[in-house]
Length: 159
Image 1 (cartoon, rainbow, N blue to C red):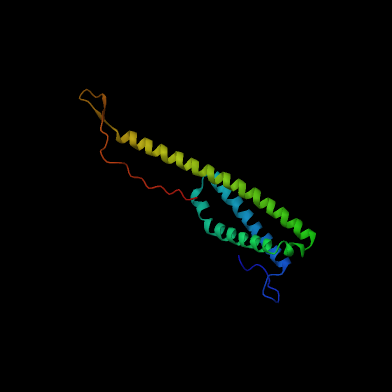
Image 2 (cartoon, helix red, strand yellow):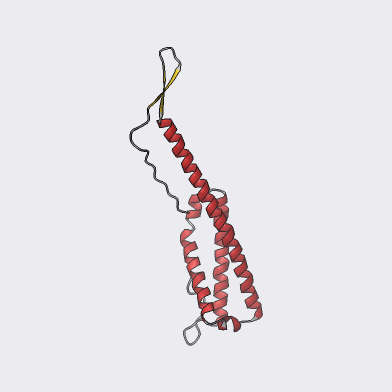
């Protein structure tokens, strides 16, 4: 993702090329965030986890390009046409919207996952706390049989 611009003679990206590269990276990131958001809303956590490496690489490339464009006090942006600046502004706005929706979906998925894990722990703890059997007359019996050891669970909360 870091080599989307053509260097000029001095070895630095030409302003047009730098902005075009940023727009391309942001567009890819918008698409990826949209896909991840959809998967998270469908609680397809494993499928969304498969997107994390690409998401990280695109995010780093996006941040680096934004930093490069802002390092020269806006001179690179001033060197491109108004139409390109407008396209960049529109793309950045769409990215911010996609990132916001994604953050909400990630938070909701984390909360749902935590509630699910707590429900499992509660059910297992409750079941382990009593035994069910039958008395001589066939009636059900329940007696406290709380284990002396703790309940061990491993949770993977990465999203």
